Length: 438
Image 1 (cartoon, rainbow, N blue to C red):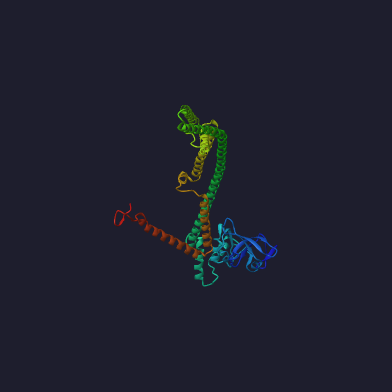
Image 2: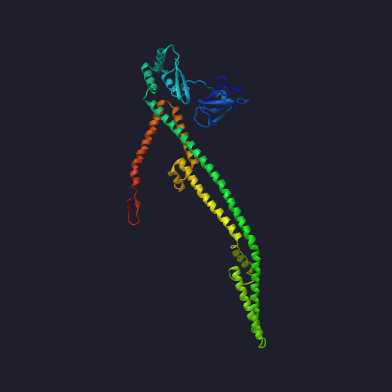
């Protein structure tokens, strides 16, 4: 499938095209280049941008109306048409219409290679054509003016002038973008290693927690198995004691009401009941390690507590409790090992000082955020470089000089404020005015 461009030529998948009208809704700009990915039945183009320097180039959808009026093939262009372009390799063909400015534009588009092609009989002819192009001015405003313009435009071919400034700044921005890109990739690798380590720790920690829960459940089951019969035994013995207490109280009541002839027998019964109560109390104290129950209403709670205390001395309960403690101690050791392994990884990747800062919470390492920040810095440097490449060399040089002047003013203001930052007065409550800081 093909669509027809504004030059009347067919456009198909894989073709290099150029858009010739700014359209914010479509996301395209004048003289921007694209590679066609797909052409639909109605002539709509899906195209991917080229020469932007982005890691993930954008893809746009161009309706057939825009293609027919404002898009055409872009395998070659005039020097004026490629002023904003940036490519890996640039090939410029010298013709009778090429001026000095055209030579400069063509010879500064390529990042890695820029070649000038001259069709000549010999080297002398080629040099003559080149000199003629350097003196050519399309405006034809006189030989002197043309010569001056040619010299200015060709200053990029020698090691001084605005072209040197622009070229140096572009090289710096390209290096900064490449360096930030490498840093972003490095941070991304560190983030991946930390994430992998964190995932491994999380999986192991879940296993430790599961082991603790299993040990705790087993201990509770053993405790219940041991405590159940003890509760029944404690209830029985507590009830026996309370019955002895009731019997003693009844014997005491009979003794206080009996007549003279029955007093001896009542006294003997009371004494026997009292001794039985004392015997039961001593038995309960020895058997259950505590005071006996006071009333029948408190008997169930007393029996549960007494049975629980006695169960703690059972070897089965003790062994289960030790298993729980061992599991918890093991998890504590595992958590300490996690910290050591994270420190070792950070020390290996970033150095011991950064790792110690992270360990003590002074500088928490966030590789994901660092990767995003450095990637944003790389993108910003590329955008700034692309903007400079889109400008005429003189305007780009003025922009660079203005930026540098502004940066220098900022540094001077910072130096002027620095003494105040080192010696800021603060209020001393012990005096009537500001005290000089130490």
